[in-house]
Length: 53
Image (cartoon, rainbow, N blue to C red; front, side, top):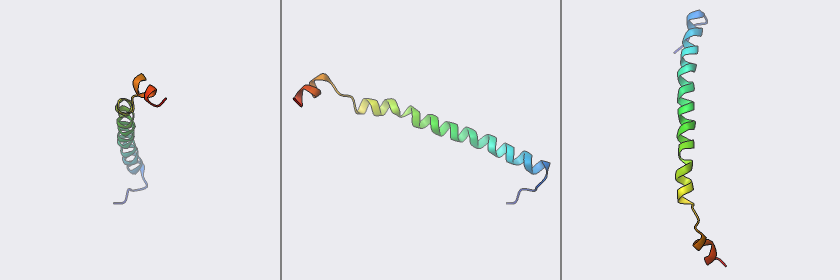
């Protein structure tokens, strides 16, 4: 699909860029929301640390 080199084409590209920015921001948010889950999976208790002594 070709986008014409006109004002209409520029507006179409701007709209596509605008929508894709939401997709990228949502993807970053999804990755950041996984960090607490990873923190719970890798939690260490004092008992676990004392076993290694």
